Image (cartoon, rainbow, N blue to C red; front, side, top):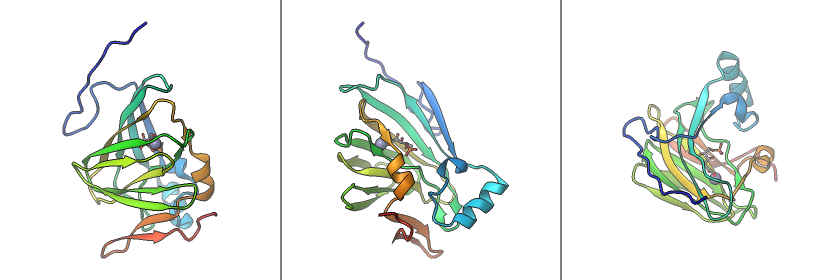
Length: 191
Ligand code: F6R
Ligand code: ZN
């Protein structure tokens, strides 16, 4: 059967697409071992398993030729001095790219390749970010009050490899220095 073209809207404010096939929510407990200050992580977790981010997915078949789309919303907050962020991943098919369009908020995309190249791009409304094949990516919300909202699109066959990041972490961290935001080397990165 042939698909028919379809459209949907992303309303402002709210950003929940008019078509949603899956609503994914990730809490603090889903990012075990990912924040550098383990003591701050455990203290916050004991208090509340807070919602870090959510994703509204528009489902398509996960095959070559399709494009998967959705809205990612990272909420403001910190674990110690590290901002709330997504788990981050490589695509299983490393040779697949992704694009992000920032709709709201402030933040960064932290990226790296398996070879150890790193890149950090600031995100602000109106900014389009192209992530070439091979680059792992993690969104970080650095606003104190506002959600970081992005629209993303990537190839249907990409798949997600979370394991590599869970094991090694990212090479760069985004932290709140008090008087500003700093990008630092991750002291506990596992080579
Ligand atoms: C898909 C993609 C985004 C993220 C979303 C949540 O390839 O990069 O849709 O999935 O921002 O982040 P993760 O998947 O790292 O929990
Ligand atoms: Zn991705």
